[in-house]
Length: 428
Ligand code: DLL
Image 1: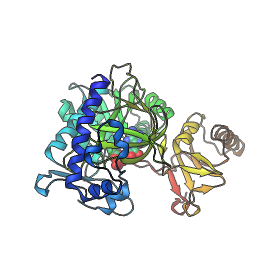
Image 2: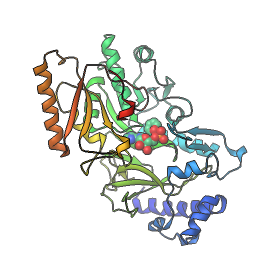
Image 3: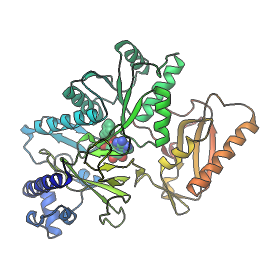
Image 4: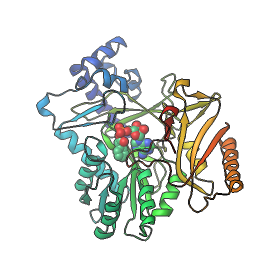
């Protein structure tokens, strides 16, 4: 769709959704009144900036159904975020919401090059997490054969890939590496298997991590993005040109704001992604502050799609670490680590939360790869110094590196936990 037509459609839908929530949800009604804005004040897309933001905290304050617009008997399914502390985010859907979601995931998979000829092994967790059922319903909608593998049981996952001829795998990037590690242990050659595409998301990963996964699994690794508050996976998806994830803008209005001032930023500038849902029935959300740091590009992609692309997420504004006043994101550290030979793509960044994330020095635990690990101190010290130098020059801050024996750091089958508080450190 030409962008002008797309923007007309967005405006029409935005106007509708703003009146819809204004009439139904006291939270939006009150917040709009506080700002002195009425639904009829939305006359252009830029007017979205007049609307109040919604944050994760607002979900907590309105737990569980305070943001919901429909009576309970119209809700056909409820998902939730993992929520490690406090109450999780609750995401209710009507049948129409579920259908739209399946359609958007099907569109995402098609965008990645998957067809009804493919066998999609879905290794995102099934249950209340949106990854499992989201990819499941979208895969079926496309007509691919979906294997509901869920997370874990890596040996069986590998057996299914081999026996069923799996051609596409959906999982977190960190789990793709676990699959490779286990395959190696079992003498299975994943590189030459039937696998050809990876639909990877749910956690930040770097361009170097992509290269590593592609070279180890012999696949094209593409990013999928989404979040519970907005829908689940399938908000945006990379095409094989690998130049950003196409946001399905007929359904979502995306903005980039300055995370400190909250002011909208122009296309191309990096800031916090804010999303308004344009068609949701059960729980539409106005201007959700995702905390995800990215930028938008509206140039037509080489694939021909006109919908804006969001750049790889460099991190979450709440994952940002301040070292001597310099902002550092875990993904920047990952990028550096993966360029140094002898380092396994497993690491942990240690922070002192009591110290409000502000420290004088970065502490990073890094696993050494099996091929290079040695008891000889001089070798390991040289590697440590090399890493220190690289991190110093790229990040501009001092890093204290602790080298860890191969396979010593904990593996997670879901989202990888890269930033760990000192009080939670494992004993090695
Ligand atoms: O992780 C939904 C999902 C499932 C996405 C499967 C992709 C695949 P939540 O648990 O609510 O939902 O977490 C959402 O995860 O705000 C980002 O910080 C992060 N995230 C999701 N996809 C990506 C990605 C699911 N491709 C939060 N790159 C988001 C980087 C991502 N971060």
